[in-house]
Image (cartoon, rainbow, N blue to C red; front, side, top):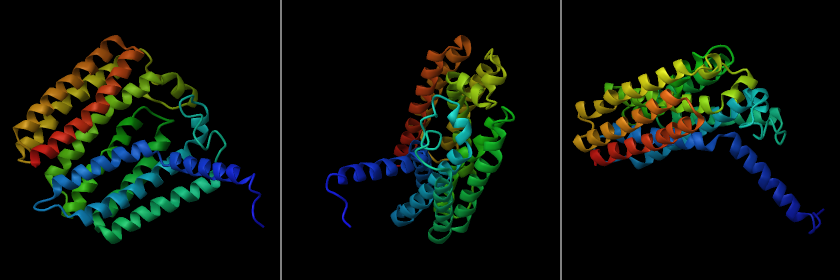
Length: 299
């Protein structure tokens, strides 16, 4: 039987809403950051002409794997997400999706991404991709409800995308790839501590042991923000020392690093939500700007 013409718009609207919920389950904003970092790592690892087909394969495989990881993470943390205002409207805690299909969806994407990288890119890229997923889901995610050290552990899988891109281009890991890894590793701490400070009441309700929850005076949080932003400055200059980029990049990295540090110091001194938001905004501008000058200077 054909659906009644009067119900067709409702059916289409329902299907569209369902697709949007599955799309949201993949954490598309996080996937975008991962793909940006992967593409930069790939480009920096390329010598000679850019192998566009291999780059496309790398992006597709990484996107599938990252989307699957995001979906599985939301499946795992659905009960905690229901207790936080910033996440309570996600598809699973809001009840728009059921846990079973969401789990299958996440497993399918993660498996497809791993297999795609293995078949279309290289073994090392696939191994690093799978290790990223495993560390994020099976180590970092369970630790979040146990210790604030989870942030440090989670920074390792979080920093893997540029290294995966580098390995996809070169099929080997070099010191340059580790430098890209280190830059993203250090960048994450001020970024996530700013978020944690802004939403510390949410994390407390959900039982997530972020540093601002465990030490609400914010002294340790501020100290770590300053230390990591300060450490990021010399590490961000390493590509110039290694011949990956020139003095244009070095000047941009130094200037943007000092600005990032400035906002980190303001947040550490005042420990207010507005200053944490400014630090978060600075982090969001800092990383693409760094990548932009890294690419331009290589060109």
